[in-house]
Image 1 (tube, helix red, strand yellow):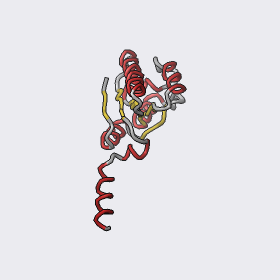
Image 2 (cartoon, helix red, strand yellow; image 1 turned 180 degrees about the horizontal axis):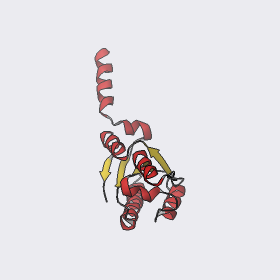
Image 3 (cartoon, one colour; image 1 turned 90 degrees about the horizontal axis):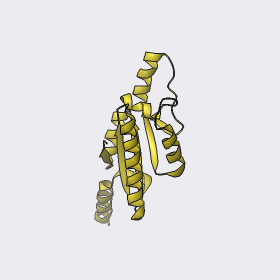
Image 4 (cartoon, one colour; image 1 turned 45 degrees about the horizontal axis):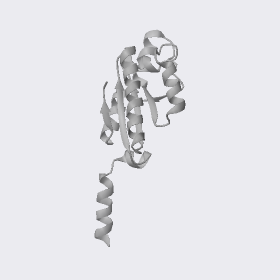
Amino acid sequence: MKRVAFALVAILMLIPAAAFAEGEGKHVAFHVDENDPKLMNLTLNNVRNVTAYYEAQGIPVYIEVVAYGPGLNMLIDGKSPVADRISVMGLEMENVTFAACANTMNNMKKKTGKDVVLLDEATIVPSGVVRLIELQEQGWAYIRP
């Protein structure tokens, strides 16, 4: 009996933590670090396309868009050239989250002396780079459009 329990524990350790946290399916992290509206729109197009592809196959997909450095402008209220698209996606696509880098926010605040106000759809992570590392370690696919 102990051998069976040990084998079960060993097998469970092989399953990525994300599978437990969000269920079975595909997990995809998108990386945005440039203040380029074309890149931001390409990223959002990719997010929609990936979602549509897997949903058509009946496979759940979880997507996180991680923005840092100049790419954080994608998630800044009043600066984002794709704010309207993100707002719509936030309402229509429960499988998509947007992560904003706190390091970048702090650096922007130091330069301007003003708080950085994010879009409602954004959540703050301590470090965008570290967030991407964590997601990859959990088995998430990594896409840099």
